[in-house]
Image (tube, rainbow, N blue to C red):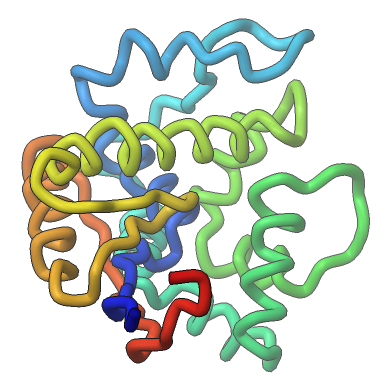
Length: 206
């Protein structure tokens, strides 16, 4: 039996984009009680140490949020570093969001020069542990995809989640993106998406 083509709606620049929304818009009020009490590290306070930025946020934070939410942050850093985009994406997660220790990183250097206030906010969040921020971003990513978007779909469509993506039949991808848009409008965040499809491969197990 030939399987239906499947695909997914994938959040572009997911974790930096979520950080950009946190630094400009904040945690959605209905998430605050739970998300502000994440046990992020055994030796850290059981709260999210988000810095209080000036209102309106500094220009470099607004620029960072805009690039990441539009899915263009890694491309911008790749151009600045003269590096491959995939390399920059890997090193950004390690060298910027969750840097452990002091070692040279051209990706971090270019990010710090381009977005100094966003870099400083990351340092303040991670001051007690290098994994504070990355754990919080993973928690919020899961909250968005699993607890907010999926319930909009699960009674209507067969869907599966994986990290920052929702998989469905290819013909249902429009409805999946609409569910993301509805949730984002409700919580006031800005994110962009990349649809991906399998091209209708056959499932040998069916």
